[in-house]
Length: 398
Image (tube, rainbow, N blue to C red; front, side, top):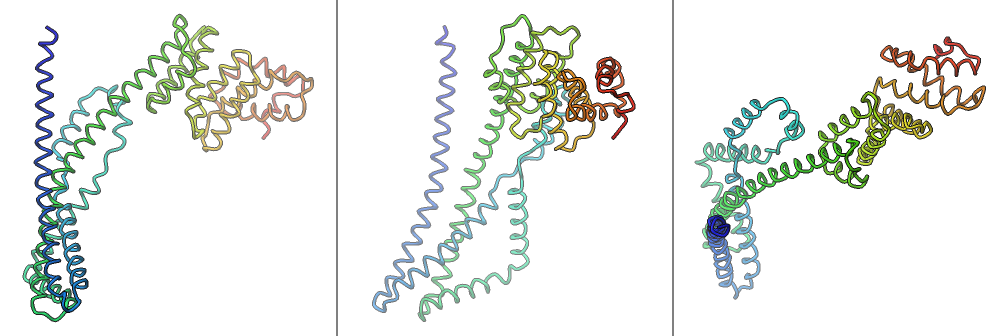
C-alpha cells in the first residue's frame, strides 16, 4: 500500500523534471541559434577581408570589421539585457503587505528583523530609466538616425581603404550584429534572469525556514537548561545553538534567562544554569557590545558567593556602557560597589579601594530609581563607611 501511494508523487516528480529539461533545451536552442548567427556574421567578415589578400590589407580589414561587429553586438546585447530585465510585480508586494497587516502582534514581532531589509531593486530601476531614455531619445531623433548610421559607417569604412563597397558592408555589419546582439541579450535576460530571480526567492524562503528551525532549537535548549528537573545542556551545545539563532531570538533568550535569575526564591542550581546561558550569549558577542549579559552574569556570580568574578564582569559591563555612550545603568556601579565592599577585608580600606568604592556609590546615589535597592543594602554601606571613618555626606562628593 505504501508503494502504491508513493507512486503518484514519484511520477509527478519525474514529469516535473522532464518539463524542466524540455524548457532548458528550448531556452538553450534559441540562444545557440543566435550565437550561430553571430558566428556566421564573423565568418562573413573574414571572407570579405580575404578578398584583399593581394593588397596586404587582410588583417587590417578583418580586425577592423571584427571589432566593429563585436562592438555593435555588445551594444545590442546590453540594450537587450536592459529591456529584458524582469520586474517585480507590485500587486504581489501589496498583497504581502496586506497579509502582514492582518497577522497578530506576536507574528509581527517575530518577523520584525526580516522586514527591516528588502532586496535591492536598483537594477530594475536603472534598467527602467535607461529603456525609457533610449526609447524617448530614439523617437525624438528618429529622423536623424539614418544620417548617424551613415556617418558611423563612413568613419569605420575609412580605415578599410577606398573601395566603395566598404561603407555599405560596414553599415550591414553594424545593423546585423546590433540586432543579433539585442535579441541575444533580451532573450538571455528574459529566459535566465527570470529563473535566477525565482530561485533567489526560493532560497530566501528556505533560509527563513532554516532560521526558524535554528531559533526553535535554541529556545528549546535554553528552556531545558533553565528547568531544574531537566538534564543540563552542555555549554558547547548552548553556544552552538545560540550562534545559529537570530538576533531577535537572542533577545528573547536573554529575557528568559534574566527572568529565571530574578524569580522569587530562585535556587542555586537555576542560577548556575542561567550563568551558562549568559556565558553562551557573551561568547557570540564578537563586537563586545552586550553590556547587559555581562552585568547579568555579574549579578549571578555575586549571588553565588563569587564577588571577585562578579566585580570583573560588572567592570566589563561598565566599560562597554561607557564606550558606547549609554546613559543610565547606574545599577552596574551600585552592584560593583557592593562587590568591592564584600572583597574589602582591610580596616580601614586601602586608599585605592576606598576611592573605587566611593566612586561607584556616588554614581549610584544620584540615581533616584535605586532608592529601594539602596535601602536594602544600607546597613552594609553604613558599616563600610564607619570602618573608614566616613559619613553619608562623603557620598555626595564628586
